[in-house]
Each structure stands twice: as structure tokens, then as C-alpha cells.
Length: 116
Image (cartoon, rainbow, N blue to C red; front, side, top):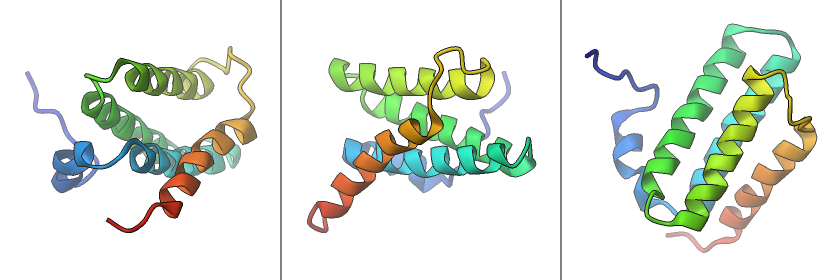
């Protein structure tokens, strides 16, 4: 079995679970934003790289929240919507602006938190 190759730095993977869900989802949202931006300009290496980074952060977040079913369910649905949009011809009819707005909410909440 081949070793899994990570995109993000090893320290990100090791400390991801230490961050609150707002931080995790806000960072996923940054990659979702890049994915939407670059895919709107055509299928490019930048779009593919952003999609891959988003999926990796989704996976880190799923692992970090595996013992919290309501939170895990939310992350799994968000990942499924993301995958449907980019890989399944958007069968859910997701509006990209609304998808971005969902993640922007997490970023806003995280920015309002006192510094840790």
C-alpha cells in the first residue's frame, strides 16, 4: 500500500483537531472560494489544486469531529455538496454564491472570536 501524500504541511494535519469548527470550516471556505474562482475561469491546474486542498481539509475536519455526530453530519453534507458541484455536474443545483456565503459565515464568526 502506497503512503498517502498530503498537500498541507504535516503540522497542519497534526494540529487541525485543536482548532474550533469555525476555524476549520472557515479555512475550508477559503479553498472553496479559490475552487469556485478558478473553475469559473476554466478547468485549470489552479482550480484542481484548490479542489484537492479543500478535500484534504474536509477530511481533516471529518477526522477531528468523528465523535460529535451533529457536527460530523454537517461537515459530511458540506463535503458531499462540494463534491456534487465539482464532480457530479451539480445535480443538487447548488448556487455557488450561496455555497460561498455558507463558508463566509464561519469565517466571520471566527474573526469575531478573541485571540487564542
